[in-house]
View: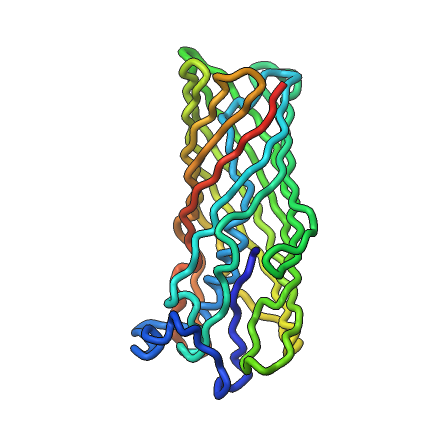
Length: 290
C-alpha cells in the first residue's frame, strides 16, 4: 500500500529492470538537473506525507461531550515514470501499488476551558497485509477551537503520525533474484492554524501549518540504510468541508497539500537537490457522531 523507491548507489545497474511503461522515458536519457539523491529524498518523503493526519474537520469539531468514529479514505496519487526511474534512469521502482489507503478515526470534544473548546483524536491502520505490504499506522491530534460571532471560528491543532511498512519495497535488480523484505518507517509532526464558517450544518474550513518528516529505510537485499538528505520541513494546507446536516452522520472532504520543502542539500555529484516531495491529494471521511 505504501510502496516507495530507493536508490542503491553502491550497486551496479547492469541487471536493472525498467518497467515497459517507462521504456520510452528512460530511452530519452537523464534530464538536465537530475539528482540521484534528490530522487531518493523525494520518494522517502512522499509516502510519509501521503499519510499525515490532516484535520478532516472544522476548528470546533463537536459540541462538548460529543465525538465521532469514522473511516477515512485518502488518495495516494500515482507517481510518473520521471519519479519512478532511479539510478540515472537505469531502473524503475514499483511505487503505484494502491490509489487509496483507509484509516479508522475517532475524536472527542472535552468541556470548555473559557472560550476554548479542546478536543483530541486518534487514527489507526491495523497491521494487515494489503497489496503485498504489511503496514501499521498510528496517528493522533490535540487541539482547540474558539467560536466567534456570526458562525465564524478559529482553532489550533497539533498532529503526529508514525507509520511502518514491511515489504519488498526496493525491487530486485535482476528479476530472477529472490525478493527480500525491506523496512520503511516514516513519522510526521505538524502544527495547524484553522478557520471556519458555520452555514446551517455545512462548515467550510481552512488549515495552514508546518509539517516535519523523518524517515528510516532498511533495504533487505543489501543490508543498506537509505539516507534522506532533505527530510521534508515546510508548509501544508487543508481546504475542506464538514457536513453535519443529517443527524448522527458526520461527513467531511478536503484537499490536502504539502507545498514546498525548505531544506536543501547537495548530492555526491555536487548537484543541488530539488525542494523534495510535494503532494496534492484528496481525502474524505464518513462516520457516526453523537
